[in-house]
Image (cartoon, rainbow, N blue to C red):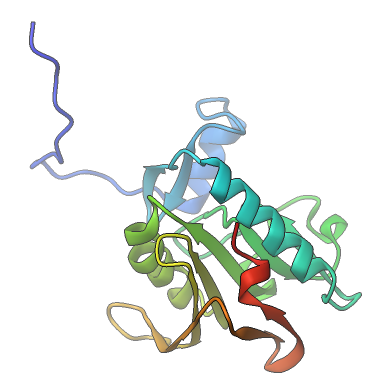
Length: 197
């Protein structure tokens, strides 16, 4: 018997709302920790993380925690909520305290910075994730590019643009430092080499 191939259906398919996705979690259809996230209304399988990804994620989190003001906190691989998605960025800097979100996940309006660490996920992180974060109005998106060993910083979401995008993208090489901005204010700088494994 030949193995079945997974193909994109030609029939009309249905997108999920964030509320429907949350309902599936509450009903136990999906479980916390299942390897999926809701992106632009679609259930998307998360990529497997390899050791360099894990190391870079930890380095980013530690670097940001050393600089984040007391009215913000750093979270890792936890969901945030946008109008049509519930992504789980590798790292996010969120306004307030984690206890402020005891009954709901943090909304995009509370997110000052999202970070994705990319190796095999590079195309998705550059395209789909950038669209999701730009559409949500998240001011700054860092893409830790493990493939090319650099940091890509997206700023100035073009709200209302189709497709959603960021107005600026600056690349920082391994010998450079990146400013860490919250609400448009530089909180500190981080050496790119300190983020890469």
